[in-house]
Amino acid sequence: MPSAIAIKQVPGKPGKVYYPLEKIAIDTPKPLDTQVVISITAAALNHRDLFIRQHLYPGTTFGVPLLADGTGVVSSTGSSPSARKWQGKRVILNPGTGWKDDADGPEHPKGYAIMGGTKMNPAGTLAEVVCLEEEELEEAPAHLSDEECAALPLTGLTAWRALVTKSGNAKAGRNILITGIGGGVALMALSFAVAMGCNVYVTSGNQEKIEKAKKLGAKGGVIYKEEGWEKKLQAMLPKDRRWIDAIVDGAGGDVVAKGSRLLKTGGIISIYGMTVSPTMPFLMGAVLRNIEVRGSTMGSRKEFAEMVEFVRQKEITPVVSRVVHGLDLEAINGLFEDMKNASQFGKLVVTIGQSGQSKL
Image (cartoon, rainbow, N blue to C red; front, side):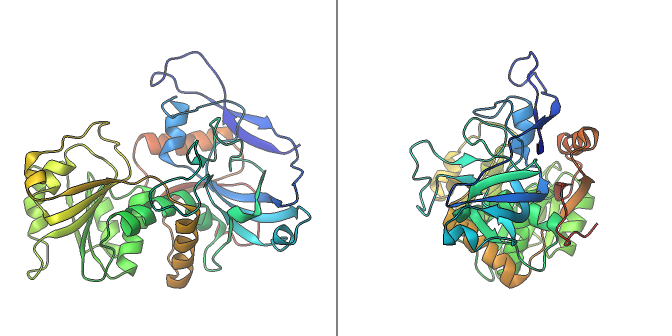
C-alpha cells in the first residue's frame, strides 16, 4: 500500500498542542471515469500546515495526508478521453476545489476546500499517490524542476490573486510594497510584479533577506522593526512617483497605520494573511485618504490556470529554501522547525518520487 504523512492525535488544546507526524498507509486509488492518479514527485509546506499541527486551522483532522502543494506524473487514469489525455504527463495540482471562476469568491456553498490535513478535502500531497479530477491539473512548465513545481501552486495562486486581481496595480511603472519578504507568497508576488514591470519594494526583519530580494529584482527594502521605516522607504521611491500604489501584505498589525503614510490617495492594501496579529486597526486617516483594504484568500481555478501560464511564458522560477528527501519524519519535522523559526527564504520542499526532472 502507498504511504503518506499525516498528524497523530494527542491531548492538547488548540494553540497549545503540536501534533506529531506519523507515517500512514493509504488505499491504492482507483480512479473514476474523469479522475487520474498522480505519483507525487515533490510536495511543499505552507504556513497552514503549521497551523494544522497547532490545531489553529478550521477542520483539522487526522488520517488525511498533509500538504496542498504538489507535482507529479500521472500514472493511471479513468476511462474518459479527458482523463486519458493526461497519462504519463508531469503535472501541477490545483491545491483546492470548489472555486471555478467567480471573481468574488468560491461558488461552492461550503467554500474552497484546500487539500491536506482537514475534513474538507480527503486528498493531500505529502503522499506517494493522490487521486484527483482531471480538471484540477495543469501541465508542469518545462523549465521548472520537480522541486520548483512543488513550490508553485498555493503560494503562486495566493500571490497572483493578491497582486493581480485584488491590488489592481499590477502594471508597469507602479510602485508596489510587499511586506515580510522571505515567505513563499511574498516571493512569488515579488517575481510576478517584477516580471510585470512594477517597481517593487520590500520589508523584512532581516537585512540578509532584503539583499536576496534585491537580487531577485526588488528596488529596495527596509527593516520593519526600525522606528520610522516608512520614511526611509519613501526616500527610496522614484522622484517622479513619491508614493506607493499598492501594498501586498501577509502580516496585518500596523500595516494600515504605517502604509497609509506611503500610499497614494485611493491606494490599495491587499491582505492575504495576518501573521502578526489576528486584528488590525483601521484608522480615520486612512478613511480620509480613501485607502482600501481588500482581503485576498487563495484563488479560483481560472486564476490558477492564468498564474501557471504566466509562469510558463515568463519562465519564472519559484524560490526554494530547503529540500529533504523521502517520507522521513525527522527530516520533515526539520522543515516545520524552519517555518516556526521563520528562517526560510522561499519554499520548504519534500521530494517523494522521481520524474527525471529533479535538480537534486
